[in-house]
Length: 259
Ligand code: YXS
Image (cartoon, rainbow, N blue to C red):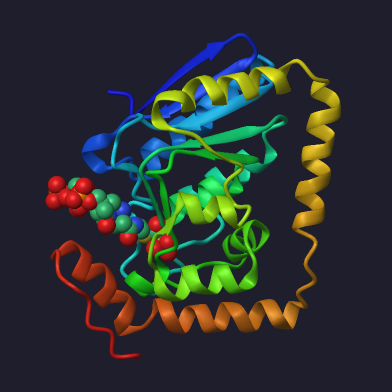
């Protein structure tokens, strides 16, 4: 049974996350379906993609599937992790991917939405960066996604508190492009997508790739990268990492000891 729905309308593709039972967790199977849908839409030369979930759902996506996180001794967000693959496919799609958001966006799903080219959200939408809540060492390119979406002060507040940011505040901060009521957001988003699809796809795809390269152009020395990776290993080999995942599975608050 498919975990997403895919449709095209004129030159616009619509990918709807459709696994409410698991709160649209970005599991390997769901991510592979989204990546497959993006490849098919690209083959059809679809110029704009809307990435969405059901309107009115309290959860847009709960983020990485926690059951798929390794128990330790292995980077939980390495290059081949499904979430990392999804982010790269969104960033490399040769046309705008617009996140249409209603409901809560959690953890890796927050990065996924922030990696899109624009965010249109309902006032009920919220955005939470959750590694600190689970004891997870987020990865370098993921942190850069957040840094490109918000000021360092806001990224630190979201990352350190792990508390959801309201769509209204996100719009005020320039993270959300438009705040649109639930009963208008579909028409609004499709109208914007259609406007974009009527423009030059070559010009837009080149500008998108230029901006991706420029946004990713942050110098990090090999020594700096190795230091970060060493620090992250301390976290994913820690007791706190195990505790965070265990507490979620046991539906209780985690007790972090800092070791
Ligand atoms: O008890 P059952 O078997 O029905 O399963 C429950 C949840 O365990 C399951 N579920 C998940 N399973 C795996 N990974 C998840 N991320 C996940 N989220 C939920 O789905 C069933 C229904 O969940 P339930 O009962 O909690 O639903 P709810 O409507 O009461 O609450 C929805 C949420 C999203 C508010 C709640 O599920 C929640 O707080 N989920 C965790 C959100 C979160 O911390 N996500 C971060 C995932 S880790 C990640 O993305 C990165 C690695 S990081 O953390 O570094 O950013």
